[in-house]
Image (cartoon, rainbow, N blue to C red; front, side, top):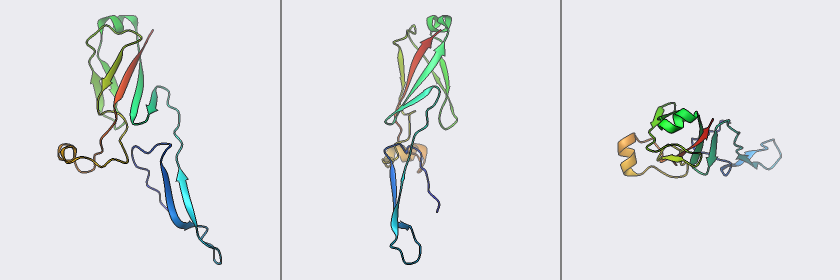
Length: 131
């Protein structure tokens, strides 16, 4: 049996395949229930559909407010500009660059802009670790 794991699935996602388990002759078929476990990542953390990313910067980079370059989950490069001196409390929000929202169909406007297969996404929160 093949199971399709879609973008945006989380630990709250459960797939149930009715009467697909224990198909031995003479036994009543049971359900197959699949749940997911999320693995830890060294510098990304998931909170619902949002991603929290910790960027390590030098004191010089923080004082100069250098742009942050991040590789998105789909492989694209994102450049986030910072318009303030970076402190440990600075959080930059990049809207629509978080986890795909698996249980939400794309809106007509989003489908028109990005293609029929695209899903809306949560946000990316960039925090800073100043060295």
